[in-house]
Length: 204
Image (cartoon, rainbow, N blue to C red):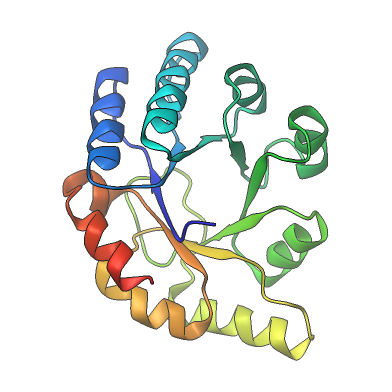
């Protein structure tokens, strides 16, 4: 599984598509399509285009929240928030071969996600970020460390955890030392897509 995800950004379909294309042109291998304020029609159109582009570039295309759209366009999977459809129902709809990720903010959430057998966990936020409405409590370095330490103390195998929320290039080394598998990045890549190559080099 890739260690770097790009979470798409943009206020319009055109902006979203431009940002996704720029990320793919700069070597991203995993895109999560997230556009919270879109109409279903526009979101479906964006997801369809994104899936086609990812297929052309050999990249993974994950849809945020919308399981039915992911099924319709045969995306590679979905990412589900804690208030979204359950992992098990999504698995029934999409099938066992699709990637299903789940959001977490606490140790309890992480253990819940492990029990639900999602393929990866998006844990965060690392720090404050303006790209997400209704931001969960900020974890910071100590929050990540405490969760990994607690899992080890309980002899629970560390799942594939992606840090999310205000993640920057200079955070990678420390996150990996803590035991975090990968990162999901939005703003840093949207603002400067060329940083993707640096992220990927750092995360080998």
